[in-house]
Image (cartoon, rainbow, N blue to C red; front, side):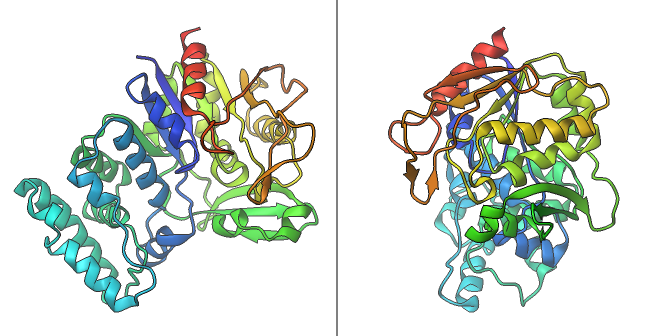
Length: 370
């Protein structure tokens, strides 16, 4: 099977991931700088990199591979949001003490590993941790990381074994203190990923000029060696779909990843989003690709283009149309860095604004085959 590497966030490429499972050896590369939700609370308490996108991608991989067993069901469980901290803690103990029926019927070795990671997590975060709306899978993954001396790659390897997942999922960097800063076109700075993705309408209209991936120690983010190995062996590398400034562009600010990408000869494909979002208000796909091209040429010393192909959704309406609050993203009309633009009807017929995973997967496999 062809080896495909897909840079993405946690959930936007879900249908594509599902469609590629069984048809390619897929490696997902996800951010480690999420600063919202359950990941935020875990990061603030124990100083790990964000595990939320990792867990989402791993669960998608498990679903695509037909691994929806008891372990995956446990890892997909989420605690109550609105019933108070004590209720959420009691719910957590229902899992960590092995009283959940799915845990009770597991093989003792498997159950023991899961309970060990949950207990490791609980003992590290202490009695005042807020478990509300927390993901059990996030707690298991974080507990595995803590149990293995903070090594997230080992934690992911163990997590994959627990869930019998074949495909690979890695963060692009192993740094624990990654964070994002966006600069708006009026010079205002917006710190942290969750604030950037939720720009209020007024700031979204101003628009993002640039985004910077940094570490709190001011060191340059270093690449995950597992990602570099996957890139070196890839038959195709794809970017997206996903949040442009917070899930996709920052990967290209990791120096070793830029070097690895400049040395591969396989197709490199950008999968255009179908809808605008707060990060991309009033922009076309062509505008975003120009931003990507500028970012790439600032980082890459080879002066070679990043992309060979762009998959752009054909907008069928001669007027502005929205799905919920967001308009369709107009497709690119001009060639960017001489790459081939492939315009097609890539929207899911049953889920407006979402990609048709099979259509995208088939096109990626066709390009990978040459």
